[in-house]
Each structure stands twice: as structure tokens, then as C-alpha cells.
Length: 470
Ligand code: ARG
Image (cartoon, rainbow, N blue to C red; front, side, top):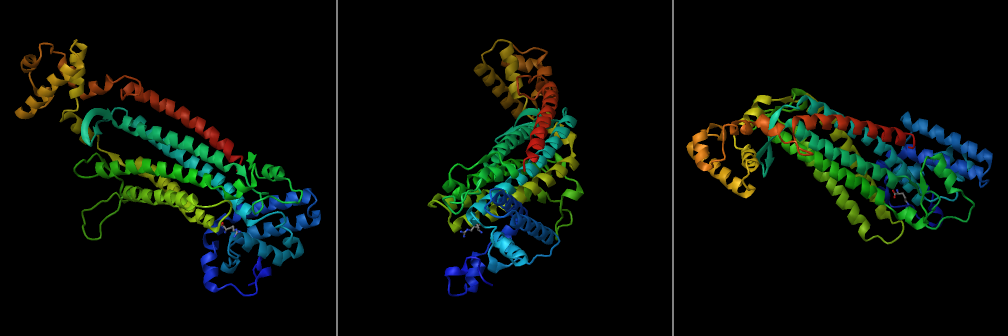
């Protein structure tokens, strides 16, 4: 097949070179943006008089026909035509002749592919925003339901202090809020219009880049043509966002795996969200969490790959930049699927409240509360810490819990201990009394859930606004 750039060549391209060079297998995903971008470009060429109104009309009709052909599965993508841009353009020219051959006036694939990627990114960002919002809502629903569900909080994976499942889940809600904020930044990086930069240095023809930006709902236009065709910061920003969001889901995954083990027994995944073993009939495995944890590494890999691809590239376009796509697309799919499946997985899991409560009642995670008790009676914290440390050692030696040591025994450790110490040791009290701002007190978390709903409502407004600008 004749190449659109074949003029100076006297031989056909080697078949291996065609196969190695082509990006069509993955960049066909950009077909919608490519066609929409070309329509806006043709309209601008028509309005500025660079092409005739008639050619403009024919191009737009031809492109719309190609769009419906692709969507109907009636388009054979060709490897010899390399990429989505040349596949569409060749088909257009075959269909409408010389008008089609005018479409690429004042344009290069370098600014064209950049335009497609920016548009695609903006669409995906809004879809991911919606998924984040839905996942946040799921966390808020569960946090409300488990406002009183006691469980141990861990540091060093050792029981530390009593908390509630609500408090634990709201920690993830806070992380996701930051993910949403980062995603807004990703949008800002993608909302820049590169078309009109040409191959590197703009054009001598009287184009109007701002018309194109307006038609395609871009907030701004790249101010430097060389930057416009070589910038991939927006891809890096997306991959950074994706890596951090996946990291959050991966930490949660680790906990889901631990909590669903027999040793913890805190939760049981719904049968529809777990898998079995081909050999061991008793197994119920948390594969979703394991896969999300596993796929996180893959997304980090895409970020590293892109950073590495860019680090040695001279300005401006180099074919290395074609490597921006597969990792980017894969990261999009991975983040979207992970958020989607995770939401339903956590909403359907069974929480074993008794097991969680037993874990808090049968350990020493109330020790800090006992030290605070002595502080309230006037003892300096360091001394209180030492007294309670001795009490813990004594209890362990006696095979008892802090609640099972008698007041007489306590009094020998410190005369400040009185009857009311038993109240201070109750896990419910420990949680209820942690009213410092951001703490796990039941009342505070109930308020956090309400505030969370308000935050989500605001995010939804942002989402609705941005959706109008894709
Ligand atoms: N398929 C190419 C890419 O994704 C399109 C741009 C090619 N430009 C060029 N001058 N070869 O980067």
C-alpha cells in the first residue's frame, strides 16, 4: 500500500519495519478523538479560507461516515498505514478524493497525536472522577453503618489502640479525596490545546488555533509550538495519579487479605467476590484484593517506563513518544476496573463484628488510656507510661488482662489508681473519649461521614462542570 509520506522513497517498506513501526493496534482506541479533532481542524481551515467551504463540508461528511463505519465495525485497520491518523486520512481521501487530501494542511501527526491524547485524557479523567466518587460513597455508607464497630488499630501490625471500623474506612476516604484533587490537576495539565504547532514550528498558513480550542472545549492553547509537540507531562501526571490511587487500593487490599484470613477472621468476602482452589476444596481466596495489589506494581512500571522514555529525549518529537500509549491505556483500564470491582466487593463483604470486638477486648490496646488516666490524676506522662508498662508486664505474667487486675494490685503500682479506672479501660470508653480533632470518637466519625457527603457533593459539581468541557 502506498504510504502517505512515500514521495521521496523508491522502495516499499520492509514488512518487519511496518510491523515494528505501527501503533494502530493500540492507538485505534483514539479514533473518536482523532475524527473529532480532524473535524474541528477542517472547520477552522474552512473558516479561515485556507480550504473552500465545499471541501470543508465534504471532509466533515466523510469523517462522520468513517466514524459510524468504525463504530459499526466496518473499518479494516491497516498496519501498513501505521497509525489511527493515517488510517482515517487514507480512507477519507479514498472516499472523497482531493478534498480529503487537503485535510492535513497546516498539520502534522506530531500535533495531531498530541491533540488526540489530550482529548482522550480529558474524557477518561471525568470517567475516573465518577468512579472515585462512587467508591467514596461506598466508604461513607460503610462508615456510617460501622460507627460503633470496635476493632483494634494497628501500628507495626501489632495491636495499638482501640478504634472503629468507621474510623479505619474514613482514613481511606481521606486518601481518595486527595486522589480526586490530584485528578483535578491531571485535568488541568490535559486541558491545553496543542494543534497548530505543526511538526515543530507552527505554519506559514493563516490558521487560528483558538478557534480549534474553542470548538473542542479546551481552556487554553500551548504557547510554544516545540513544547506542544514534545510535552508528555500530562501523561506523567496521570500515571502519578494512577500510581498513588493504586497504592491506596493496594494498602486496603493487604488489609482485606489479612482480615479475611482465619487468623484474623474480621471479614468474610461475599461468594460472588471470592474465588476457590482447583485442588483444595475448603479454600475461599481474596483474589480481587491480591490482583489489585499485584496490578499496582504494573501501574508503577508504566510511570517508571514513561519517565525513563522521556529523560533522554531531545526536543521535539521523537518516535520514542509513541511509547506513551500502551502504559497509559493500561493504567486507565486498571484504575477504572479496580475502583469498580472494589466498590461492590466492600459493599457486599460480611463484617464479623464479634471477632473484631473480641480482638479489642482481649488485649492490651487500652494501655495508653490507662496512662492517660494517670496523667489526668496529675502524674507526668513519662512516669505514667512506666507505671502502666509495669502493669502490663505484671498482667502478662499473671495471664490476665488489664481489666482483670484488682484495684488493690493497681494501688500497689500507684496510689493514684481509684475505682473509676475500670471505666477508663473499657474499649468503648477508650474510643468515645478520643475526641481530639481527627480522632475516632463515635460522635466525631458520625460528623465526618456527614462532612464527607458534603465533600462528595462538591466533587460531583466539579465532575458535572468538567464533563461539559470534554
Ligand atoms: N503514531 C505516532 C505516535 O503515536 C504518531 C505521530 C507520528 N509522527 C511522526 N512524525 N512519525 O507518536
